[in-house]
Length: 104
Ligand SMILES: [Zn+2]
Image 1: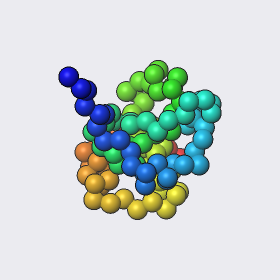
Image 2 (image 1 turned 135 degrees about the vertical axis):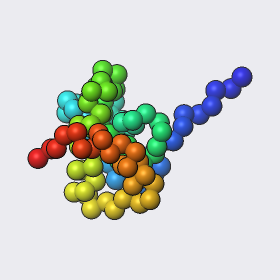
Image 3 (image 1 turned 180 degrees about the vertical axis):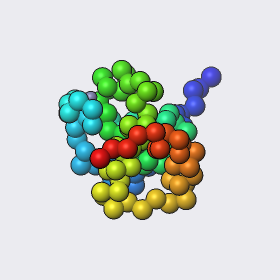
């Protein structure tokens, strides 16, 4: 039996927002840097995307979910990205995590 392709891959539009982010947002490495799904593959919203190298992605802990969501939302705000309906649904779903901490 053939395996299903992974759910909710990021679209080219979403990838283009992060296109200039060449270094891992956690360790600064430029080796095997990928666009990672923060909350798993439940959504392809850019708010669910995080620039990570393979090593940090493998070692990531769900304790950091709130910090990651906030880092991405700050980045998108600075890029002037306007959330659409799907993005707002994603944010609403994880409201508690967004309220958990505040980055300066
Ligand atoms: Zn890294």
